[in-house]
Image 1 (spheres, helix red, strand yellow):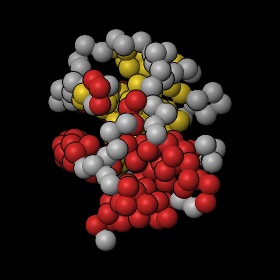
Image 2 (cartoon, rainbow, N blue to C red):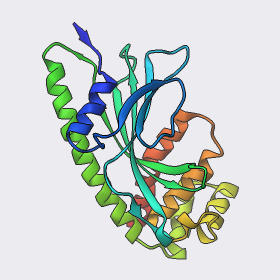
Image 3 (cartoon, one colour):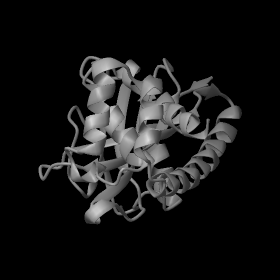
Image 4 (tube, rainbow, N blue to C red):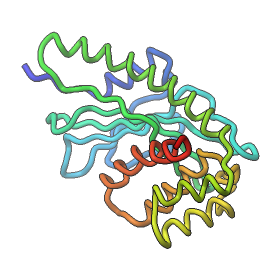
Amino acid sequence: MYQSVNTVEVIRGLQLRNIVSPDLTIAHSHFRNTRADEITIVRARGKSTKEFVRVPLQSVPIQGLHGTAIIPQLLLWNSHLGESTFQAKLGFFRLVCSNGMALGSIFDTVKLRHVVGPKFETEFSGFFERLEMSLEGGFRNLEELTARRLTLEEVDAVLPKIAQGRVAEEIRRRFLAPVRIQDGSQDVWSLWNVANEVLATRSRSPVAFEQRNETLLTTIIGSLAA
């Protein structure tokens, strides 16, 4: 018999493993909630089988440039009709406004298949093992990216690989003279976030954003290693 992944069970599994605070309550809504004491499972209107959850991690926010915090979160996507796999996306976000608005980038995606019979328990257990490895690797990568300062020559060598024309010029300008204090350290992490933000204004497609997000960092690192 077909067995779909239950979003609530995944969140409780995260709490049992101390990845997410066990003190947070779980709620359902059609709107994204900003309450600090609650995890809200957002179910789209008219598409009641699709769910989205933004889950704050138990980890203490990482202190970035000038004391700004880099906030680790998991973004959970689910479909109870099995239209897509259950996905947990590890992201690091930065508060950029006093109203709570955050910008960030996705580091990795761990998937859990909707399967049948006894295979489900094996898949469910393996999902958490892969997720914990992903979290460990994500924090290690973030540390390396924030420690890797870039020279002007390196930036100019990378830019043609990720953008062209006026878009590349805007990324270069905002990297060297950042609009946001969070992007002022001139490291690989800052370049990734500046490029993500600039490129996001050029596309309204969530699919295009995700595809770019997953390949942009690989392109930057590959260009620096060449």
